[in-house]
Image (cartoon, rainbow, N blue to C red; front, top):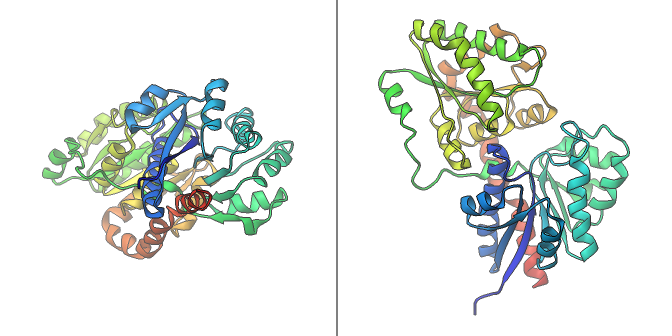
Length: 379
């Protein structure tokens, strides 16, 4: 007898053309499928998205518009529960509207009487103290709470939540796998044939002065002068990261070519597994975007993190690494030195961190397993 499907609504920052958040969604969907099969149940995801047509076409799941309250309420009412998905959903740095939105979706589900699950979220920074009691009120009524680092758990504890009820798990993207038939990115075959190693670069605009991008550019040039390599720009958030990448490419193109190196950009890797394939082809990756670093760690690519947010530092700590610098204090000489070190000693970097990374990959599906077991017990 085939079990009837249980609908689960998934809330997160989906449909915004941000590769990192799309990777979170793909990872959650993959984990739910595997863990529901193991539990002997069928889960039918319904994703709240700013672009439901694109989300349905990309992932083959039902999707409703996240800003249409009637559709959201109907989807939740017809579901077996709501997952508030991974990522930095509960923070008030990018906008003061972010926390009220995601808490509002959770509260709506709780009012309707549906179980709610917090899936590997990064909580904070939460600078507006008025949000603290609201987060506490919603989280204490969740059936399951997991966060992606100890700092998030400590913040929730400071709000009055019992830390014993909060599970610390890896970012879901640590469990993301390459597609079974990984595409051939094309440019790499030509560059590899020429003997050049590849340095992947995932950057974003942050400092208004572009200080950090200028230091990265100078560091890349200094390293390329010692060991010519291929610079592969990988924009994670479209279109703003494309613009940041183009800004650096224009500064570097002529000088890199004169040094015997080369430059390219992959602007059409919109599916997370396409970008994961790109990162897997790199010999070293320098990243500002958190999920560029998570992709690299998951594929055992030596990485260099540039910190613009505590979440970068928190992730690097978990794999026994530190940022090469922050956006306001970055030094080109240190960037160059780290690139050269990892190009020459990449295997040692991998061997040292393999046990840590393997453990994170193994643990990445813990929230999906707990949610599947919960639904199975209620079925």
